Length: 313
Ligand SMILES: Cc1cc2nc3c(=O)[nH]c(=O)nc-3n(C[C@H](O)[C@H](O)[C@H](O)COP(=O)(O)O)c2cc1C
Image (cartoon, rainbow, N blue to C red):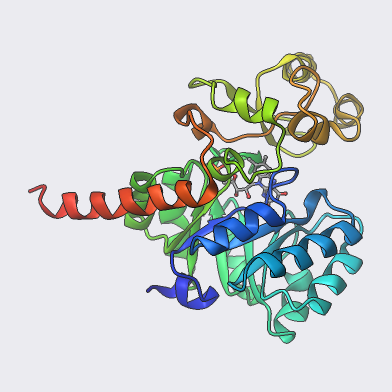
């Protein structure tokens, strides 16, 4: 037991990060059933779709689960209303100001965590009254901090800055990486890429197969002017890079990105023109196991490494 398992009422301090186009009820329920905390990624769902996913998740597991809500979401009021009405026990917010929703959610008895990429914003989270902070490093899949602070550097900084429970994210897909994060002061891990590449992930087979074939250096942080995002190098990325190198404005980058490109890439499997979001650590992964097996492997390796480290000197 530690503060993170106690806070959420879970067996292992392993959180499934909310993920657009990957993290629906199937994946969230599978991670919760395996003893972690599954989060449904609301960022790619209309409110009615989210409600359906919440209902199905409740049918599939009696264990705690949550919803991730990027706060820039246009229909945020309706999303939050549904979360409260459906009595979702946990909400992880991201991409916005933690002050906006934390009190409302906590007044309803909901546990709240917020995702940050710097210790400055971690302090703001603590002041806003969140129950836990997720500190996400530059390695991570999805949207990212523009300062490019790595998980290895970020975690000790955030640990010094706040007292509340700290969850590390970015580049963690193995028990060894989880142990490293704990050694630096984290009390839980939030994992995206490893769980995006499992059977229950709703990403397309084309996307999953490409991700498990990636090598070191095959993803890059791009789109810094309009929302830094880690992308697989494909033809769309090449266009982004060329535009950025030629000094394109935020408006021009928005136009190039257009609408629905992440859906096209991740969900529909357009590997050429789609926006393909995945973390650096995909290069280490070469299988697509069930989520329970992925989580079990991390816990097993964590325990083995803890034991081995006692014998080291
Ligand atoms: C495909 C994909 C989509 C993501 N979508 C979201 C999202 O909607 N909201 C969010 O807060 N984080 C999102 N993330 C970030 C994850 O929740 C998690 O913090 C991150 O993946 C952790 O790093 P890792 O990929 O190295 O495990 C996404 C990540 C991936 C790979």
